[in-house]
Length: 155
Image (cartoon, rainbow, N blue to C red):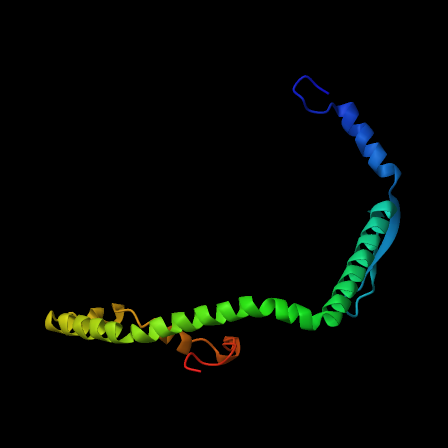
């Protein structure tokens, strides 16, 4: 190491040579439509490729095991999830009820704001009055809305 803590040129060259020693050149064929294929040589590390392939195979095996486990234990897993799901549904229902209940307050504020702006001759500001938060749901494409498990708030 050099006095500044960085590797010396000789050390860098030695590391480069060590890295190159395990590399092999493999052809890489690139096909572009009707044009003749291009072939280039690419340096590859067979050890790293083997490790990567092994990792991919291990991942596929773990994913298969997970699917088998989920399939074999589906009933128990669903039962385990039910309390948390019910709590989530109840929170969503409570939030929806609060939004629905606050509609009257919002409508009153909107009427008063509209009247005030009209009286002041500032109709140009009417569009600055925010829409009711539930209005945003009307703008969401139906296919993006998740159904509320257990039905609507009043079920």
